[in-house]
Image (tube, rainbow, N blue to C red):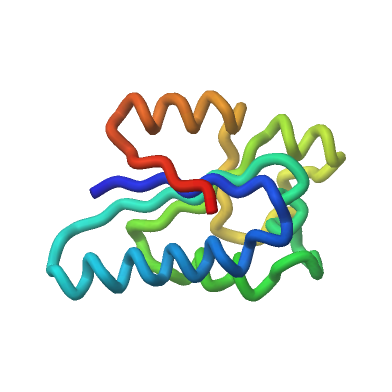
Length: 115
């Protein structure tokens, strides 16, 4: 199973972190492999900056979820919010455009979830 979660609203961070955890637990119980990407764009990218108070617990939980989980941030959103890549917390991946990443992952068979 391959799943891409999409978050662009800061208020949704706790829900996304919980959904990722629940999904990983389910597939672990089923002894089935799962690959998860959390794609962040829009105002929600601020939470991935060091020192952000937006949703530090949720970001930390996602980054600690394991090697089969990727936290990807849209470069266009970073540019729009004037967040430099060096300000991002360790472990975050930057993609050139969030919408392109979403389209390409879905074309590659990822299931799309937007809480």
